[in-house]
Length: 210
Length: 159
Image (tube, rainbow over all chains, first blue to last red; front, side, top):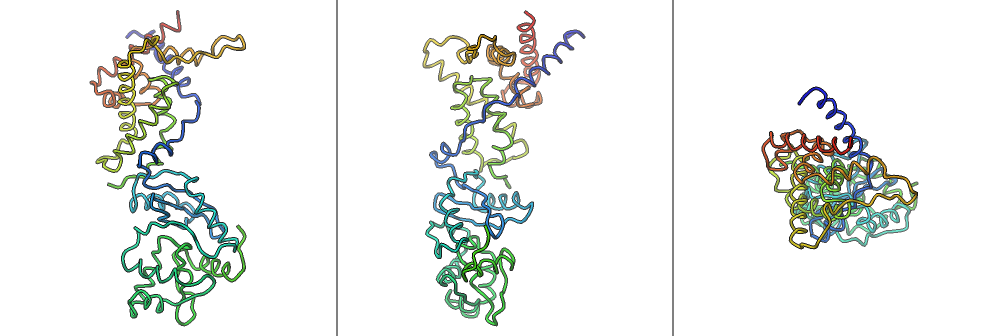
């Protein structure tokens, strides 16, 4: 290639890059196609709430994860879901509309029980028993780690029950915030104690600001 | 294998994959081939052994889907003007077509391999090695296709 042609090529390249990369129409969504093909293992959405930003993730079986997102931690939360559920994950907020609506009603003090299909695959056998016992605690009431452990068939397992509650993949929906220390202390919480206080206050009829 | 959420790939590459397909199969069919490309990628994704060049992997799939599409269209053998995919430039207000549209049309009119190589080079910003990988040809052949494509486009514009 001679010198002149080279310059012409460089010009042509510049023109091409500019033209072909110019903003084109927004590509179409693939969510419906992917879901119809049975390949949408995880649909997720972020959702603002009085207890901070949440990431909600559902599988075809139901809601599988409610995650508290700390500032700057969203990528890590999503990566964790990809590892634990499936990397076939797409942002598909409309597929979480029902979960988001029920959560909003709960935060506003207008909903006492969730009517959502759940996918409990992130729970081991023991955690499943503990959280099932926890789900039986009525709205606005509290229980203790010891009572929950006993209800899960493990009367001396209050520490293990605490651990199971601490790694609850579906906080708020499975109300581990209703479990306190026997002595009346607040205990721990997967999203930090401030959030636990907020949720308990909502259930005492003090709705938080959204 | 610690694969990122598939949405990350979509966020990073959707526009370029779409543009690549508009350039290779034309704007009318691009949306269908785009869906097929992402479906194939998503189907294969969890079994991927190497996540170091996801963009190259995606464009390899997009290229294959574009070829499948061209073959299927050839088999249907409907008499389609060649090249079939040129968007009629909207000239309703009497203006001539915009320069960009002329260029898109000129790219669409390139021979298959040159068009694909040029699109990979200038839309996907692929290195020649990546073009070779996506098109399953040698690297010198990839280089040659890009340069012959460029030459032809230049001649078109200076005519």
